[in-house]
Image (tube, rainbow over all chains, first blue to last red):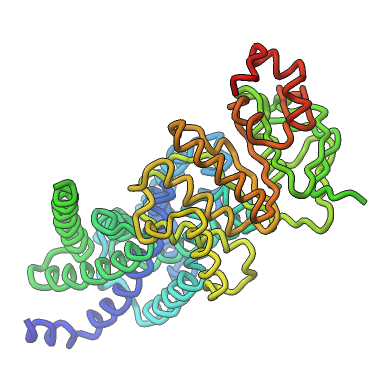
Length: 276
Length: 239
């Protein structure tokens, strides 16, 4: 085990990927608790598709992918939130609309420029090789900013998630905090997208929160437990993917599924025990 | 100089393109226990949104007087769907009532924690502190939300259908608590309910509405009024 780890970290690109991956997993897990409880789980999925479109466009235009993706996806997050709030088009339909549109645009742009090749596969399912050194620095800085903002606004995020009407009635600027959640989510998704893949990044948001909610009863414990589960699953998934040469994103999701089932069974057991 | 806290004048609210409330004028004085009664769809909840600053009146004005601020008002909402499977301890819910008043400081101060504990004590839910909110009974949940509202309420408490869905015993208990809050903590209470008999039994003032105001005045006058007799068939002595 130790040898394996030493071997793993002797590759600088893997070491970089692990650092970024763990930070992004933490961000995703923390925000995920609020998103899942607000019934916004699919926003993560929608945003990752938008991210795919912008990545494709950025590659075609030959500009740094993260610097284009972050602002565009943040904008999309604003838009999705607005649509979900003043819903003429229902929220889930709006998300499906935006995500498929972006996917289509992205695919067309790619096929017109570089042609459909392994790049597309990497975008879809993720690759740890996707990160350049500049990307890594930016990712680390941004994810630390996300973590700090989450901690600073933790209580307010709780209030807005638990009961938005009450929060607004007692004078909190709920619109602002919803925006904050959306922006942080957008940034997190763009950062994690290329490692986890467009199709799998939302699992990073949804799984840890749902897993923790099988057992934990308090918002605080759910939050902490999600963070731990997320980071641990990422790490284990990473090692497994290296050992068995499986795609990183998918391996991490498999570990998450396993932990979810485990918690689910434990949760049922605990409820049975209480009833007796 | 009166001791009015909120004066509403010629209020009209529109909701989804139709008029929900018309020509409503009344005032809430310090120390009042005002019950707003009426059938479903009579504009009660719209009025509450207006008082809470969540909805702008289409016409007319809502004036806060004698230094009342939006953040002095606590609010007990109707229970919403999302809360029913929410992982949160009773204490976490209660103390979140302090957030409106805190300014920008990100964490709870000692004062906030003391206040949350104090209100849980007053409502007899201290022992539920670390229990999961969703696992509490309806009456207990309502007390938790009431404690949260008290954490936010410095001078006024607005309650939207606080007893709907509770059994009569628990509901009576809640009415008793509200009276205690009104008298002992000296907090002005505005309660929306469709339970007219209980409103007449507990409130000191009644606002009866059906889109437009049917009656506004003291409870004693209300019991003798036509609006009350129409609804209850004159059976007020059985309250």
